[in-house]
Figure 1 (cartoon, rainbow, N blue to C red):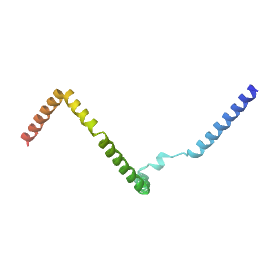
Figure 2 (cartoon, rainbow, N blue to C red; figure 1 turned 90 degrees about the horizontal axis):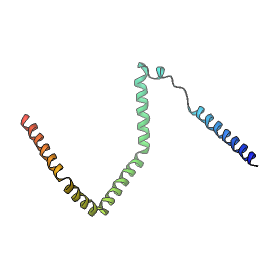
Figure 3 (tube, helix red, strand yellow; figure 1 turned 90 degrees about the vertical axis):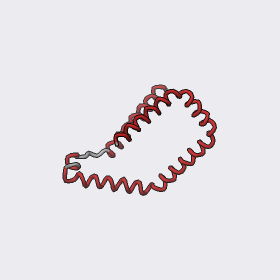
Figure 4 (cartoon, rainbow, N blue to C red; figure 1 turned 45 degrees about the vertical axis):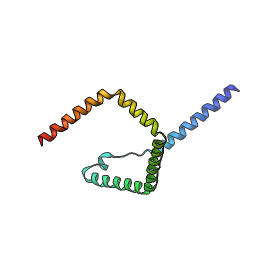
Length: 119
């Protein structure tokens, strides 16, 4: 029985492999890049690609905008919920990096002053 189960499993595995290989062959088509991207066809191909991408984005525009708005709302909610934690963290961060920040600001304003003097 064990032998039969193993044979069935191997047969199933073989059948599955053939199916995926067959599907892969159908999807994959040969592209002649020299013909497709030569000097005459290159600009046409680029325009074709741009049109396809624009059409895709236009079709999905509402979905994209709604996802962006949803993300903004979730971000806003998160910041409102964790406002105190963020403020506390910022305060601790400033305390830890006090000297580095001071040095950075000094350097930044020095460079800014040099730029203004050059103008």
